[in-house]
Length: 245
Image (cartoon, rainbow, N blue to C red; front, side, top):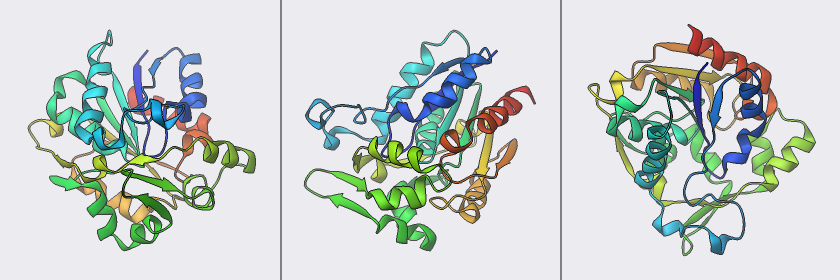
C-alpha cells in the first residue's frame, strides 16, 4: 500500500480532498492532506497574513510533511499545487517516490505562475473573472465563476458547498519564481493526469505543459477541473493505476 500526500490548489484548503482521501484510505492507503499555509479555515484574522505567504513557504510545508512519512510518499498536486510539487522536489528529490500532476501547472525551467496565466489567452479571460484585493494581497473567485470554471461537472449541491468553502488566495505565491532542473526535479518519477473537459485549465494547455518535463505516465479523465469532487471513484482508480504500473 502507498502513502499519498494530496496537495490542494488555489482558493482551497485540505477539505476539498475529503471524499477522495476516504476512498483511498478504504483501499488500504495512508493519505495525508495538509492545508497550505495561509489557507487555514476559520476567520481570516486567524490565518497567516497573505503578505507572508510565498511559494517557498508552501514548498517548505510540503517538505515537512514528506519528511515525516514512514515510506517515500506519492505526492498529488492539483492545479496551482503543481508548482508546489516542483519547488519541493527540486529542493529534496530524495523525499518523493512519485509526483502526480492532477490537471496541474508545470513550470517551464523557470516560471512564475501569474505571468504564465496572463500570457495564455485561454487563461487570461478567467483571471478577469476573479477579484484582486491589492491592499490585502489576495485574489478571490466569484461564485458564478467557481461553478462555471472550477466545478463545471459537479452536481448543483456540490457546486454550492465547494463554492462556499473557497477562501481568498494569497497573491505572492503566484509571483514566486519556480525553477526546475533535469538533475533534481527531473530525477523524480512523474505522471500527469489530464482532465479533458477542464474549463479552468484547458486541455490544450495541459498537454502543452506536459512537454515542460519528462512524464513517465499520462492518464486521461473525462472530467472538468475538480475530478476529486465530480468523479472521486474514477480519480482513485487512476491514482492506483499509476502507483501499480
